[in-house]
Length: 212
Image 1 (cartoon, rainbow, N blue to C red):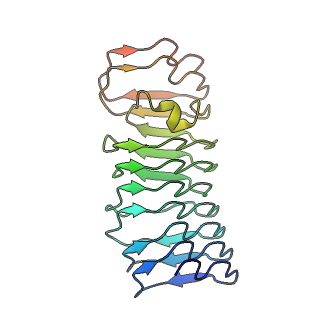
Image 2: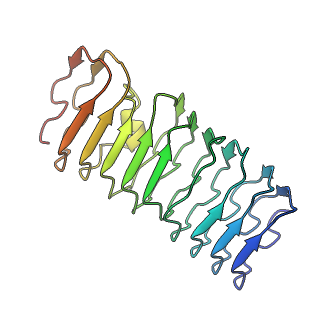
Image 3: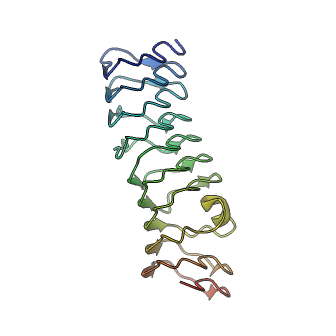
């Protein structure tokens, strides 16, 4: 049920080989939890591992479609995670404030609001043309972001970054075909070293890369 092991501050390892369903906030604030194996899970609630600040090892089940809202929020020691190829949806705030350093979203279709907000250690993101829906403030507060591969999202760029593109950005790959890069799109990216455009662009707007 919901909050079943919440605040169990001595709990370090979890292996749930025969459990199929977890409710909301089941392991919320288990501050000593280090590793979890969820290979048999078929249904997850929200906020399951929120504030599990020592969590560093996670095995997710094959067949999982969505990372639920706030599932790994504030898991500050979670530096890496492998998403099963079946995952196509990242819930709102799913990794907000986590310790991720890189993330491969090449199979993702939907990304919820604030999915990676305040991931201050995040340096690399891979997105492809598969993505269909992106919320707002996806990478707001990602102050170390250096490598970004993404389809160019005219009209959604400011929402994606929650304002301006991080000045730390060094390597940018734009993958899709679009008519133009809008005015001021990447202005002020003072660390930018390389830009690769694999799609077809007919117009680069004024100040698109000014002060880079």
